[in-house]
Length: 312
Image (cartoon, rainbow, N blue to C red; front, top):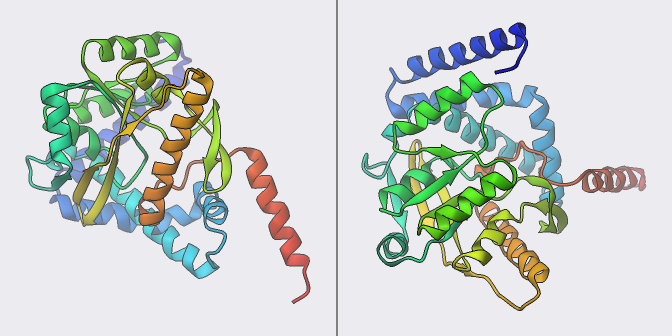
């Protein structure tokens, strides 16, 4: 690992802090730990820069909301984010087998497990999104679960250990080599699961809440080269640390002969699916990442400045 000594020391201290917090949280009952995480982030979250990002995102997505409505959803989303962080440390206790996760559409997952074909699972950062991989694997579907590796390699090792407790081995694809590995998995009959709701500068500019949002085309490209099926999934928080995972109606991709058009159509359908889930339960989406391009935020600022200058 080629990194300066101070950087390595900083990484190790961060990882040690995570391990200590994790050990402390695991001493608590699941519902207590989840509630504690929500309590902490509801108070600390509004003091951070991501809070301002989340607020701007809500103004873009829901321009009809007034300040009170935004404040209510911001508070609820920080509660959800805090609960997620706490729950991540005890995901082995939040599985279908543990009785805290119900699965709607389980017959779809069983059919994929028994008869195939391999599919590309897609979802967004909804509720506790770590629940989805355990639900897929618990249904018997052989699946490669993908995710981004943490910048801190020591912290990343801790995340890997935490996920292994509930049977999930993450694969962090990088570049074309990673994509080839995923395609090989699909060819072997293994499904692939990816998140598809964050900004990707090299992706397709597809509508998302009425604004162009660059979205990764990888899931659609892989599905077109395999079975042609995207299997959308979502996670809902029921109460406390109990959840519902939904296997939605599959998206069967079109093959018109125009590959670029087919890819764009698939990405548009993914964005439409994620948007619909957010509209249903806006407090459960991960609002704190910058989803749209700079141009969308600049246009928002201009519109709001112009509105402020209009005489009452």
